[in-house]
Length: 48
Image (cartoon, rainbow, N blue to C red; front, side, top):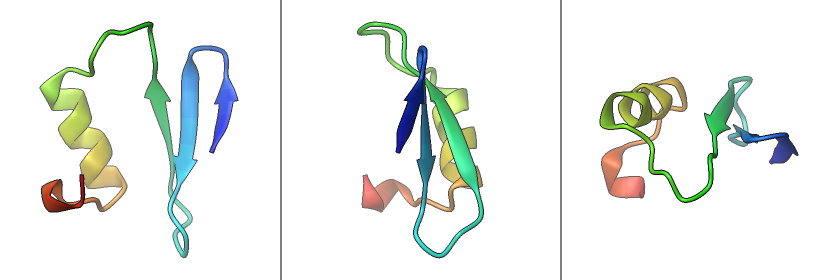
């Protein structure tokens, strides 16, 4: 993981995909953005 401003960048071991997650204070991610990021990262809801 690395941080650049208000975005956190994550990667998963064995994968080339890097995901940028906006972090703005205590605001939660909107459901559509969360699902999109989970799909890109190949993360199942059960893994959360």
